[in-house]
Image 1: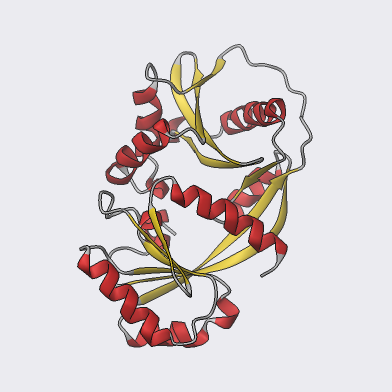
Image 2: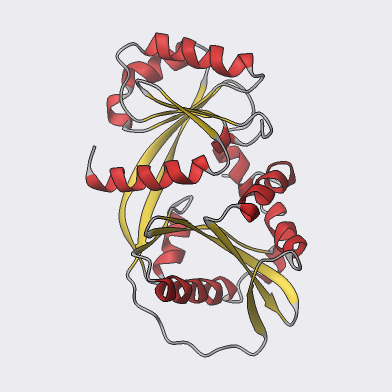
Length: 263
């Protein structure tokens, strides 16, 4: 396992642990949250090493999730070594897709910018909770209201998350979240209402968050864009691409990730 993957894996596992239960196995991890059955990230078998007996692993995963009335699902890493597992998944009736996952890190350079009088950025509190939640619930890539309402409530109470809301002329337009783990921080749930896109609001929000990270003295600010188009957007704001991971997603029912994203 290379050093980049190790860092990304540690940060990812810490993030998943905030809203899901984790069981370690000989081949990876089982994540589950029966209160959030439709939340893919909260319910999946996480495989980072090629299993010696793929059929046995699949049977174990099927038994685990079906007993809990959850859809059996796999997130598979190190795809180049997972041929036997993927072949067995197809034979067992799973659908399969591969997702390109860029990894970017902020270059720690603060860009000077003119503060816009029409823009206000504030920490999400009980007072503006509903405003921020409503924005996230309208973003299809986040899973919709059925997923985000419960997940948002958990994250809001968790000390590792800090959520921010951008308003223009007093109207809530954009949100973003910082997830801290040790001296690392991950940028999550960056979103803007459709009618306010194209106005540079995401840039205002990202610059503000970079200043927050700098003030706290955190070591690295990471972002994991959903695709290369979004990767190019973050590149405009000082994020350097370190590489790309190809993640396999196998599932027995429901929509693929690409279908949810509208790709």
